[in-house]
Length: 161
Image 1 (cartoon, rainbow, N blue to C red):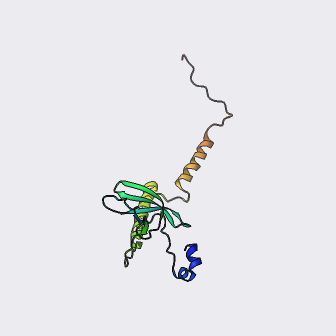
Image 2: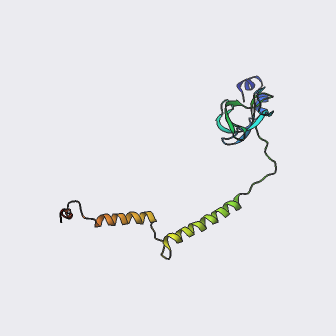
Image 3: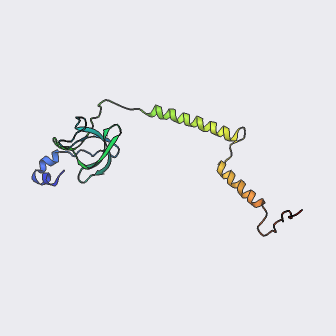
């Protein structure tokens, strides 16, 4: 709420509630400046990319056409017929239940993990360490088997023989 409203008419300021700002990534309507339009349209969908909460202004990526995007900075909330952003109306009685979809994806993921485990280990028991840890242990063992740096190197075949 603006400082002027709070000082001039505190009772009205108390009755008016501030609407929350959209979040980053939310779709809003962008209303163009007077005289600005695209194909006769004066408002377009836009995506919120930044928020100036103190001034209630947004930075928007406006979707002018299918492959024509543009950014608008410091866009105020729309009051009257001026340029600004306005929340898109939300459907009233729409509920989304994504739990069954998540459960389906989880079961598919577990099945794929099982297939991958079978492809890597076959009939063998799954070890307690990860495959990468086992490979690292093998590298350490192989390095221990290689001749030490202090041992004399074997000479190669003589030339001319």
